[in-house]
Image (cartoon, rainbow, N blue to C red; front, side, top):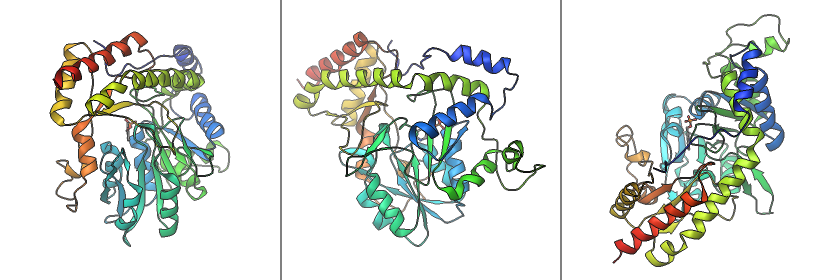
Length: 383
Ligand SMILES: *Cc1c(COP(=O)(O)O)cnc(C)c1O
């Protein structure tokens, strides 16, 4: 069986974990945490990075930092992972869901402005499959209305927005805050893990306090104060050094990992052209304002039945395809809190999008076999 995902070990993971053990400090904020955080700060120009136990945690930190209060409104896409929303709901926010674009699961940025009210505190964009949202447009709206911008960049490591003037701007560097994931299903992994990015100077100091359980412990260890104590709310958000050691090995080889994923992506894209031209199943497209980090390879089937048949056929032929994201506005938890607006594009991705296996260790032969089986499914299905 070709699994949907297989977490990769790229090289030095075990050596660095051994080193972390030999240093006698396994809790967070040690050598490997600092190496990883500095890597991101230097390579992508993020102002401040804090490793967390998950992207979910990093998003919860965003909601605390923005001081989200009961009744505050947060605009985000409905077609996203539950954590994007949950982090803000935990603080009492009302979620105002926006529809996706017709040709891309990302939030339709032309929809945002009419959803803004005096209670709107923040816009959360999600770079679905790593592909950039229209960041110049959304940043302009946020600025005009004086509301915060958060990037859920869980899937967007090492990817870029291409500006109107042709500059490549790293995703995660544009919002006031951003959150990344290193969950085993993402490009760069450490099992469970994430990172908060603080680009807005106003949040730098407090982010460290929230990270350290509401204490000023980090400032104490830098020698800036002579004792530390409880100064704010916070929680246990730090990533362990064992996990950060694994992550560092991955970051050292980020170019190798991304290159291979892109090869796999391009191979699928070329082998599945017929499925699109002959059978009307839409292949993933990368918006012209985005680079491609090959986080996912997906197709959009013509119907839910067709998708179900495709997944079943591939399973019978030893490959695991998956679909995901029941639109959050239709979820058991939130449907009665949603304002009733129809979000047809989000529904369509919920009903028809299917993801193919993509990971570092997948072989070209496996990709060819999957593509061949998809082609033969469609040849039969449309007879
Ligand atoms: C994976 C993912 C998350 C959650 O990441 P964790 O590290 O598992 O908490 C949040 N948002 C999106 C869009 C994701 O894809």
